[in-house]
Image 1: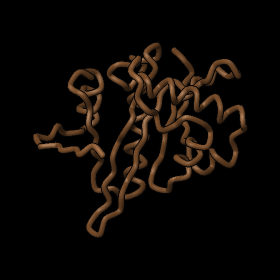
Image 2: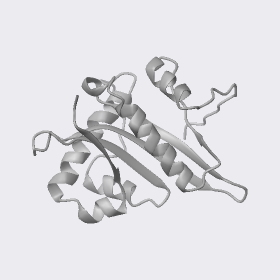
Image 3: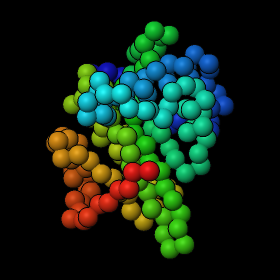
Image 4: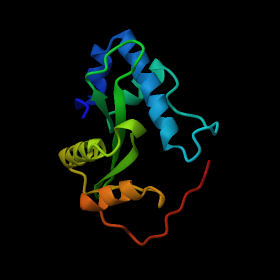
Length: 166
């Protein structure tokens, strides 16, 4: 079992990270993001392309990117981020809504409760910002992920979910 610890990529991270760490983290995040795609070979834009993209995302006040790091891996050639998840929130006149996005663990690290740890941290953050609820969507094919969410107390909603691609 790997020695995995969670950390948050946020303002504090941006101010303390080295050039090499930023570069390694971008490489790892791109690899994880590709695993989220239904067809990893498909060419689809990924929002984080370089260090500046990661810094821009990390500096947002209403978003936390939580990463799982295998601390036994720490070299320039092998980034140590093996999982990630993000939570973002919006403050409205009547409530604060929080949303989970981009939950992914490298295939070789799955079935080791890393997704559970990531989700527990996102729930903790959502409670800390006083969100009324925490929402997420997950594809039907992601059976293990859906089981995890139900086990954490998420309720499957029967709703019409709409999206307008811009």
